[in-house]
Length: 133
Image (cartoon, rainbow, N blue to C red; front, side):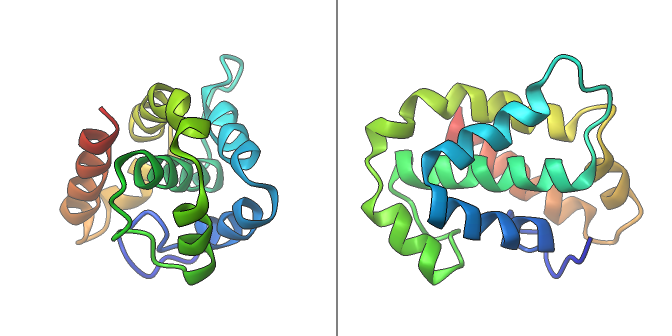
């Protein structure tokens, strides 16, 4: 997985996911969250974790009205046009997904553990959790 920063959209998986959201809308958000929350999933791979974090960030942006962390112009346009009511019911699901992705049995924390940017990534995730919570 290519990563160029600690933000929710700063990796290849999230960049690809942005295109899906712009094309498919809110259904893509829900699917990304449900994948990591599947009770039969023993381990969250980095790609699925990155997609879920990006989905949570999008839901946070739509429901809070704070769009400053949305870095893609096409996604920003979609977020600005999105109806907050259409995703407000997914806030709790997004928070649960973030918790699953940063918890045990998930690849993302393992990958960040060896990075000098670990604390920045953790701060970013905490900010996202606070926005959703």
